[in-house]
Length: 520
Image 1 (cartoon, rainbow, N blue to C red):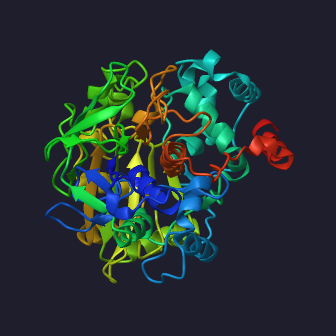
Image 2: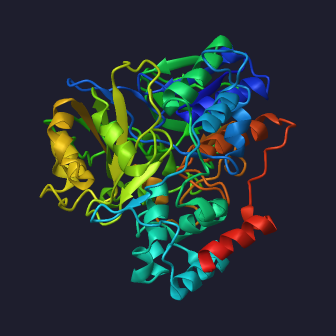
């Protein structure tokens, strides 16, 4: 029986396995997922914190959106929830978002702790002109230029940029092409960026609500996941590298036989993640210890159309940021945030301190946020884009801070002095340093990312955030799932159509409304 090997158990690899079973008719027991971690899901995680202090942790939180996430919804429509096999994950998410609609009332907070009218985007005529110019230019003209090559300093002080960049984690030096793609993909968000009412969330964190149901579904079909297996290299039968012959893995070589297929996830935005707690600082790893980039680096030397990984993983100062999760054994902080913002947990989405030196943001999710969360605990997630400058209340860069110091910085911005000591005493803190979390936004040129299926490839495909899918936007779950759908459908001749990407600018109503908001 022909075998299918999937390298990487993140959402791209899991989606590939699901499409193989559901749409290509591949028997599940002929599919092997090779994953170096002891758990699937990649960056879509949520679990007990891997530190002595305990508590819960998510490295990040994927925000979904109704219009753009077409392939993801297609997948989740046929994945049963863990609690009721008659209800799909897609149905559960729809119901949850009706029950917990997003309507941020404190999207931006100023230095004096006032909450401004964030619907005032603050774009002047020059900014509008520059935005229009970027949208009009073709990608080959934009090339490898930075975002700040296209805008004046005033643009970067606007409410619009504060909200857009923190919603999607853009830095000023990131690829202008990627920003243009985001503007086009999420043009429908222009009218609601100040409330984030277009955001869709899962009932629990994404591991519990999405990854675990997919994993369980695959297991019922006989799909095998082999944990603790790192794939270091791939070998090919021909000089042009069009037919894959074998894999070098930490568990031994794998020969790829006639009729076999191999799907390889390239790179990792959560590679070399480290954790800290109240009293420790997570190490910033700079020497690629966990092997997540090794496969792509190895095969990229063998063929010119396999991409250039160094473009994305070669400048950690440009690709890192740090997040943190609070596990609170008292409702005091969440109750006070609710009073302050007018948003109950799960309704407010991101709160950003615009004047914060770290550009600090937090999210208060609906509780419980973890499937088996202790009933007397509450969680909160936050992150900052500027980890290498001193804070406003802690005179150290975030990258050098313990969890206790990061909590002090947050409490300083909130200004809840009367409950600050109580919050410190009743809160566990997990910090997370991620050297490559923004790697997919790096400035790039044609060919830096390989095609999902390189021209002439007979038995393999590439998956994940570092392949090239024209017009689509990286740093989204949709991108990874679409890469999996392309790989499976084209290699197996699936007759179903790959859903076309949503283009809001083709809808006169959406386009006119967005343009009025941005340019009016």
